[in-house]
Length: 117
Image (cartoon, rainbow, N blue to C red; front, top):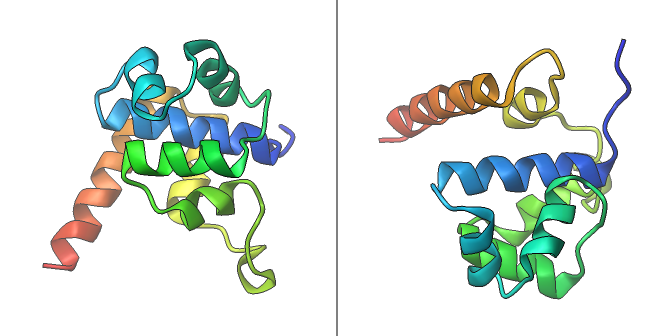
């Protein structure tokens, strides 16, 4: 059985998946978020937790609400603290490859979009 990833690891995986969805290289995202390539790489590998400035830069660059990013870091309200979303469950599943995770996320999001039309 695998261990639960740290908040920084979950955040890093989410940022990486969003970057890939946006078809951006690490260098391109780093530039958009006003970060160094090396620091973005460390964030994606879960080695650091971002500051508020970095979080806001990534939020703007990826067009993802900052509060959603905060949830991956465990900085949310008590009511949402134990909530597991479908996307988070997919991202945290160690039995799936990155490509499989991305495929599932794409399909899931297309269903959600279709239901909200």
